[in-house]
Amino acid sequence: MDKRKTTNNLDWGIILLYSVFVAIGLLVVYASSHDDTKPFFDYRQLYIRQLIWVGTSAILAIFILVTDNKFYTSFAYIIYAAVILLVVGVFFFGHEVNGNKNWFEIGSFQLQPSEFAKFSVALALAKFLSNQNINLKYNNHKMMALALIFFPALLIQLQGDTGSTLVFLGFFLVLYRFGLPGEILLLGVGVLALSVLSLVIDKFILIGILFFLAGASLYFIKRNRAGYFVIAGLFIGASLYVTTTNYVFNNVLKLHQQQRIKVLLGQEVNVKDADYNVRQSKIAIGSGGFLGKGPLHGTLTKYNFVPEQHTDFIFCTIGEEYGFWGTTLFVSLFLFFLTRILTLAERQRSKFSRIYAYGVASILFFHFLINIGMTIGLAPVIGIPLPFISYGGSSLWSFTILLFVLIKLDADRLAVLR
Image (cartoon, rainbow, N blue to C red):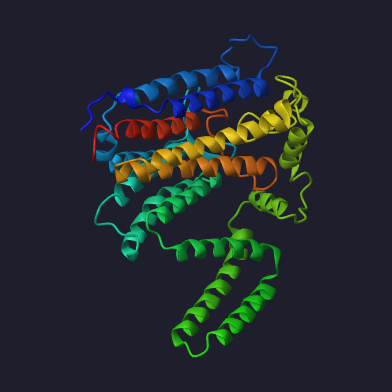
């Protein structure tokens, strides 16, 4: 075994990219939130608070790097259970913010347990799937893996945090990479497509289209009794799902959630300015042109035309101040960052570390995709942060922990063969 110190094996490239993103985050949080009427070092300034979160994140990162990597493999389920208890605790002791009760508040300090649930699921799923006796070809093993993922997701959805809930879908990429049959992934894509179609096409017309497709399929698979049952089952299931989707949309989703989905699908909304956020976001990004207006010169940013511009819509600040070249550079850098994480994943000797690495990549990818998608009108406005960039201590802490546990596991891959 290689007994070299962990620090000799650290992937400094990943750490450098992390530092660059955190620095960019500080810069754009300052640009989007500074108030010239207050002292520069006033604690009420959001960038000062973010600077404190950055400092505490650095302490967390160092703590993780000096901790034995066996801690994460041995206590994965305990960490998962502890975070679940925190999420449950929000129902009883949580503080309501923007209509959602998903925060703990102690004085001016706020903590959102749902952010840490993603990390705990990545650990628990890696622990479960790395067991030699687990095979996702077996239905009971699939159900256990899905339960690990969707139990905390259900609790978070009950708190009204739809954005964080949707991120858990990213773990399907992990399951697919480690044995989930492709047919199930294809079924998931079909369900997503059917969900969209059921909202833009009358349900009776859509069921009629499904009936026609089922009849055509039966014609082409002549004399295959098993195929007949499969197609009949799919038709009945799809028809019931279409009806259920409409019911859930009209009776379960909140009014503002319905409006956001309708805006995304290009449907008319009776409420004035229901698409205000997205419209202002597009204007801000477009106003940056090719070169941008320059640091601290974003007028739409400066005068708060874009709601939540320091959190969910912080990408608008990058677009307005740095233009097309700045956003292209940022997106390219983040995609390179994700590619680097996948490279780390494939070089792991431990199956636990490899699975965990794919979990990290999936979480970061979904956050990146949905956050930027909603700022340019390609995804519904569901309120999730841009990793390492958006203002917020809970998100920065959770992403830091998520990433540096991977860096620690990767650094010890030569010293420990589990």
